[in-house]
Length: 72
Image (cartoon, rainbow, N blue to C red; front, side, top):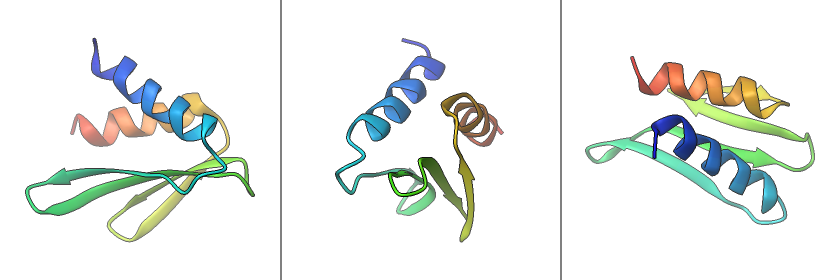
């Protein structure tokens, strides 16, 4: 399974279970590098990196950002 497909599955799962409070974290050692969640109230994916939040309403934009961050 490619990383793109894995990330897409993560985002789809967050969106599907938007009634739950789920946050996917990506860590480097003991520290979280990236947090991803879905806000049902805003209908958007919330991506947090270095205490900076970015929201995307569509899954393709959120996926593109995740791929960019994780591949650099």
